Image: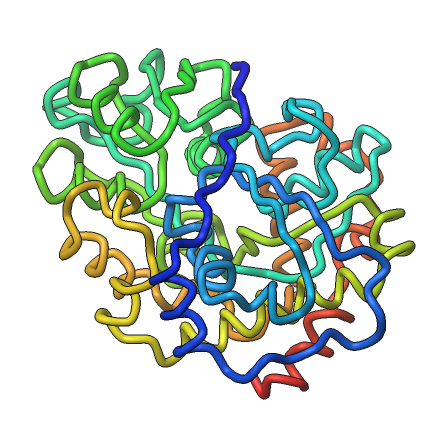
Length: 348
C-alpha cells in the first residue's frame, strides 16, 4: 500500500505559549549537536501508541534540546524505510520489532529510546460478522483488518494466532488504515475482525461493534496474549546515523524521556490541553478512558529490557520461518546508552 507523507501541523501561537508555560526551563543537549535539523517519520501518530512522541513534540522538549525536528506522519509507512517516500529520513518512530526484521535483511537499525512497554494493540472480532464466534479457530478464512501489512497490529495478530496454532496463510489480512477509516472498514463489513490500537479499538468496543478476544493494551494483557512483556513503540535509526551523530541522538532521547517523565504525573486536563483535537475521534472522554487504561504501558524512562527484546524475536519467529532461522545480533538492535543518560538527567 503506497502512502504519502503528511507534513505535520505547525505550532500555533497559543500552543507555543502553553508549552512554554508547562515545560521546564530550557535545557541544552549534552555536547554540541552534529546536526540541528532532523527528519522523523512516524507510523500513525494519532494512536495512543505514539502519545509520548506527541507530548514531547507539543511541549517543545525537542526544541529545548536545540533540535529542529521535521515530523511526517505516514500511516503504515514507518514500518519499513523502503515504504517511505518524499525524501531522506533520519529517524523512525515505530515498532521495535522492525529493527529485527530489517537486520534479517542485512539492514542495521537500532532503537535508542522506548515509548511503550506493551504493544497497546487489541484484536477484536466483529459482533455482526461473527455472532457465533467461540475461539480463535473461527477466524480461519476470515478477513482481519490492520492499519498496514507489517504494522504492529499485523504483528500482534500473527503472534496471537500462532499461539493458537493458526498459520498466517489461514486468514486474510487487509490493510484498512487507521482512525476513522479503520472504524468504517469494520462497521461497513469490509473485514470480519480488526487488530488496531486505541482510540480506534476503544470506540468500536464501547459501541458494541467488536468483542475483544486478545488484549495487549496493558502489561498483564500483553503477557497473556504474547507470552510475556514485549517492547513496542520506540525511536530507531540506521546504526551508522547513531554512530556519526551521538549528540543529536542524545538530544532526541532527552526530549523523549523528558516527555515520558511529564506523562508520569499528567492528569486528564493536561492531556486535553496538549493532544490535538483531531486525535480524539470526536470523543474526548473515550480517549481519556483509553489513556487511563493503557497508561501503565507507557515507558517510565525510555529503557528497553533485554528479556523483552528476546521475546520480540521469539514472537516473530513463531509465525515467520525466515525470522526463526535468522541469526540476529540483539545487541545491535537496541541501545540503552542514550536513555540511561537522559534518565539520570531528568530523574525519570
